[in-house]
Length: 276
Image 1 (cartoon, rainbow, N blue to C red):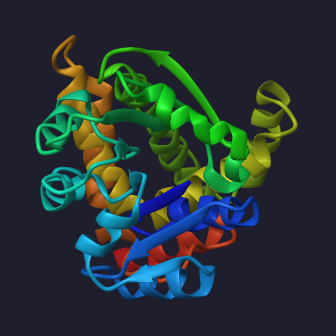
Image 2 (cartoon, helix red, strand yellow):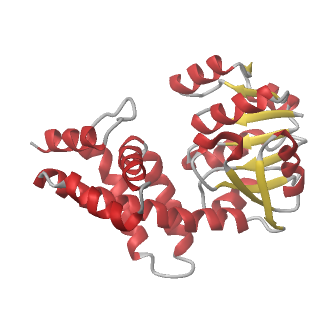
């Protein structure tokens, strides 16, 4: 089994490490990638190609794990010459997935969605839909946790959009509430009382949501744009639209964030400093 990753961020590096350990041949292409992606790829032990053509020619399965804004453009670049199975794992709407798939000439496509934090590696639940989803699910024999949920493209990405609407909406609300509590110097008290109702996992979960919201704000803004586009087909997405605006404005509030903060207080100090 030869796997190629289009894009090489946290998702690709985490999955690659465990797939390599299980004997899967994993490769990626450095063409057009950021310095961080290049460093991750070089340190991961995956096969490295200088051009997309080489990656396409040597892969049985291509997994697209790029930022939402690149989902269609990367499909355009590889779709004409790829003979294997193309899996879109990006956090994009069903409409964007189908647009990307229109450029995959052989039609062997899978709509995939990661349904949890990738820190769990191969155990992270992934749902898949489409005619060739069962082909992708063959990777379960190498430790992946892929569930085929239906035969139609759009089913997996639609569920991902609904999950994102909830999780990112909660994160935005949490950020606003705790930032106010932090300024009032009652954030630890608020955390204690919310833990009583939300459970013992809440302090770690809240800190992770707050720091991740700041560190990944630009990507999450793009993801919420996709959520709003999707939900508009069914309802007036008032809350999701506000969540999108929150993440769009957050980078200006925090300023540059070269690495993920360990504690939410670091985020709020940056916000307050930039506001002065």
